[in-house]
Amino acid sequence: MPSADHIPLGQAPAPAATPLAWRTNAWLLLATVASCFLTWMLHEPPSRAGAMHALAYTGALMAILLSHEFGHYIAARIHKVDASLPYFIPLPVISPFGTMGAVIRMRSVIPTRRALLDIGASGPLAGLAVAVPLYAWGVAHSQLVAVDGSDGDVVQLGGSLLLRLLDRTFAPVAFAGWAGMFVTMINLLPVGQLDGGHVAFSLFGPRQNRVAQWVHRSMLAFFFVSLASFVVRDLRAGFGLYHLGRHVNNSIFWLVWFEVLGVLGVMATRGNHGATDRLGIRTRAFATLGLALLAGVFHDRSSPILWATWFAGLAVLIVMEVRWGALRIDSTLLDHPPTGPQRLSAGRAIVAAITLALFIALFMPTPISF
Image 1: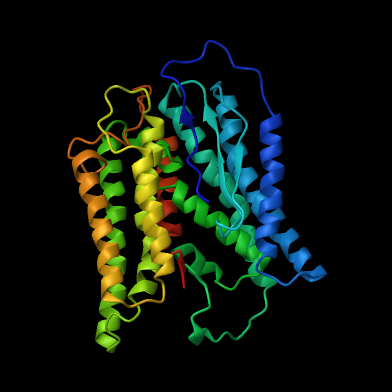
Image 2: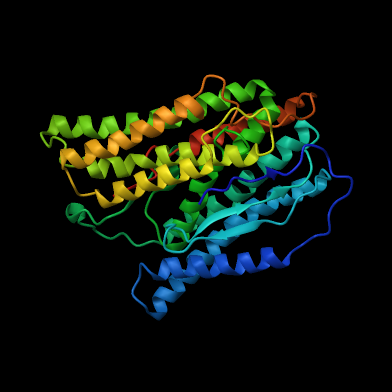
C-alpha cells in the first residue's frame, strides 16, 4: 500500500493556489474506509467480534494514513506550495491492507531545499508518531496463540530493527501499526519522488540522482540475493528446489517494487523531452503483473519446466530494462526535479539524516512470507 506522494504537474510555480476541491477526496476516503473494513472481514468469520476487530483495524490504519498525508499537506501549505488534499486509493481483496495508501498532487514546484525537506519528512514522521504507539498498544493487548505452520497456511509478517524492540505479536490495532510502519519504510526509500527521495535530495542536492539510481538497482539485486539465500538454505538441508515457488513468492516483493518505481518514474517525467526511458508503463505493468500472478499460481509447484519458463520471462524483462529502461547507463528515470540551491541549515540537515536513518530502522528484508 505504498504511496508515491507528490506527483508534480508542472515545471513552474503556479501564480495562485487553485480552489480547494474536496468532494472526490471525501468519496475516496469513504471508499478506502469501507475497503479496509471489508478486507479484514474477509479473513475472519462473520460475527460481532469480527466486526469490532475490523473497526479497530480500520480506525487505527486510517489514523496512521491520515496523519502521514496531512503531515505533507500542512507542511506544503506552510511553505505556500499549491497542493491537493490526499487522494486515498481503495484496493479491497488484492491488497492485504485494503488500500494502496494515498497520493497528494503538487501543482507547483517546491522552491527550496528547506521546503522540500519539511514537506518530504513531515509525512513519515507524523505517520510514525501514530503507528509506533498503536503497534505497542496492540501488542500489549494481543493474545499469544500457538500456531502450527507445517501446513504452509501461516502468513508471517516481516521484522525490522524497530519491530524487534517492540515485539512481533499482533492484534488488529497492532497489525495496523505494522502496516503503517511498512508503508513508511517504502516511502522512505531514497528514490525519485518518494518521501525518502525528497528528503535525500534536500540533503545531497543533484548528487542524490546518482544515489537513487543505485538504490533502485539494488532492489532488483536484493530480489536475487534473497531468493539465493532461501535456495542455498534448502540445498544444504537436502530439500533441493522443492520449495522454489515459495521462495520466489517470499522474495518477489523487491522485484515488483523495482518495476513499480519504474512506472512511477515514467508518470513523473511525462512531457519531459529529456527523459531517456522508452520501456513505458504498459510493458512494465503487463510483464510485472504476469510474473507476479504466475509466481502465485506456481507457489506450490516444483516443476523445472514451469520455473524455467518463469525465469525466462524475467530474463526478457531485465533485457528490456537494460536496453530501454531503468538499467540503461544513462537512465534519468528517477532523477528528482531541481529545486533551490541553498543548502539546509545544520539543524535541518540533522533532521534529514535522522529521517533517512528511519528507513534502516524500519527495513524488512522479507516483508511477508508464506
